[in-house]
Image (cartoon, rainbow, N blue to C red; front, side):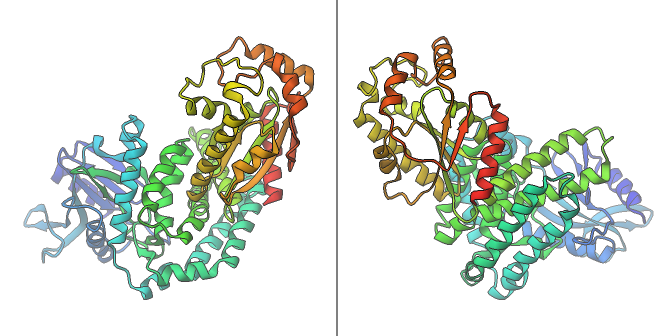
Length: 513
């Protein structure tokens, strides 16, 4: 029987209300059940050509996924002929097989994590709980050290990374910016060279599991108020055996891609409440980079296959560009999470550039203007016209503010998250209070502009809603009293466009890393 014949028979047997086709399966959905029919394909990393292999993988799919959820994967079934009709029977039946199918209970769409996030139904507290429950599911998986070493040890991780770069080299300079490709490759291979002991210890320590391999938002659902996972990779051990951090941060990169950094960090915070060791923290950006780059690679394959005349080409190319921005950011932070200080006088454009920067390169933004007011219990947009250095802007209040921001940046750093702090840092004392004992990798950038341009901006700001209280009459006092805290890069915003500034900062960070 051909695959088309198997599909026609299955369709006739189950009368689906909806069908979904992927590159490896036909998925038929009824009101209560889902039936998955594997295509007769061979992509190298998976091979469903032979009937005996499709049977084996259907049975394995059921067994592996039952580790992550209860009573969802019902059975591996056989499409068989009985007399003059076709029937669905257990895969172990002695009836002659036409093909094999996985039968699952249908999960309501509203119960999938992806849909709940899109509807704004997942808070940061929810995310932390989901992250913790997911970690506990992984913790319960028993994997022998021998199997972990063979399928997910250092040699395998290195092979996977080198394979990625070999397969994408031809796209460097065309679909992928060659600067990004070269930098990400160098940082990845350097990290592998310098941290072999970490990867070795992860295997012996039980952190490399026969896990999931494809932990995306659409594969997480809610089952009796508990988290369930589905659709783990059954067809390739090398893709399924992973460090638990590698498995989980795939989910985080998806959230980073759509700009939901707060949720991404909350999920990871919950996961790390179970896996709270130092090496897990060190591996976050390495595996985030790996996951984002794999997705970029697959997108390159698709763009090459479809060609520029494809109706979705522009959209997919934008997705590729975004994935490469993620990969670049993770690689910059791979051997140490960076805390960027966007410093300078009022009106120099540091806030505008900071907002644009974290939108493009996934990082958390800490605005001194915003936190100064919420710390005092004020509406961030309220206007406070205290004298310079008085009231809300007194030295004492500023010291409290910078201490608090340093602690927050330290928290984000432990989650592998780059932080951008938007503030004047007008005194060396403020920098030292911020730095404190937080063990932060601080990079200072100073924003400047011509004085006439600054005054013009401050006057314009008076008529707009803004968290900043900067205004022309106090600018001169700030300029005369501000201390030089130094900077690795000076960004003149007098005439430069924000996009040009971001490229300048990007090049600086690549050179610094």
